[in-house]
Image (cartoon, rainbow, N blue to C red; front, side):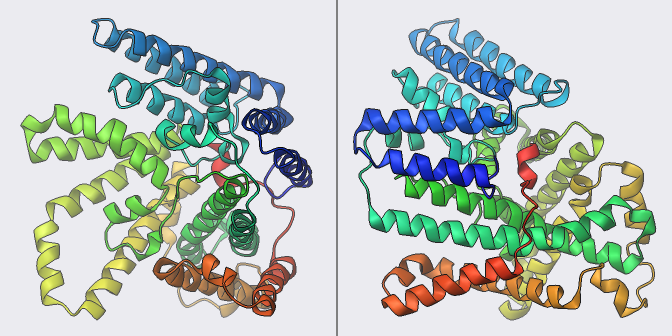
Length: 457
């Protein structure tokens, strides 16, 4: 039941109408719980059983941790809980034929909840139904954002009256997300899949072009999902965490990861890097480097069991270690180069490093990855026809314009909230924009490609 599927649209309409039928906390909680159960169970009953099992385990483990605070058994309870949750995630992720979609996202959410209780930063949620809803809330269930308990739980404990401004703002966020998903990500996806699925049959220019375009497809797909998840959340009165912040304007890879999949990046920073670097601080800089390497290798392994994922994370870690070690040299360059040259140059450098490392994320076979690296610059003087990757010229123009519109929107939206700005315009102007966006989606969107890339993780 993907966001853009007919079953989901039917579910969201019924949930929305029932939710606002009564501005009562218990009623709204019941509607959300029922909607979440239907949403998860629609995929497979076992998915729902696993998700509820993790929620129940985490709830009672959190209460036990709270009762044993300050005792000698507290670290062992936490360690046992982490092993149980991580072991369950690994078993479901890599050995179970019924791998629950999105299990890593709500497992990470469960782990952060328990760690915060152990650190005495958070008290356990006393209400089992509230906690279950926190874990299963349908709009962020499949691909996050990974919500912390102290951010989302308080929002679940109160009624949310009908608010026209919130609902219209959420719908605008939905439209932006649908545009990114349908007009950009899904439009280019089949052609990139064809190249990456048969790299030996592609020319060098096609391999290079696909390598450079894949980060845009991945971003438009995942950020499109995030915008829709946040939009649905706003429509029901919730504020979900942002997951992206213009990652392709990053000057360094470290900055890119602070802007890319932010809920995951901040999760591993807080619960892996910070504790590990504290334990290795006696090693000084080498402790930081070791912690970075372990953290980003863990990010890679989180995405999959193959060596290619581990190498992907390892590469990201090594690049950031180099950037950390060379910070003084980079500052010197910044002080001695024109800003108009330095910033674009390092933005391009960061994008290229990210794009070429993503080959380990996108292609499963190591032999195919090595082939791409060996032949990516072959045949640069090939015919112009090869550069279209099989996509009609008109579609290429539409795709290119859509990408430019996405980046222009994000630039101005970073200066001022454009969705709120549109709300304050005259009725005819607002509706003209709405109709144009909807027409663009229906005219140029690639319908029928329902899967979001990050659902598989």
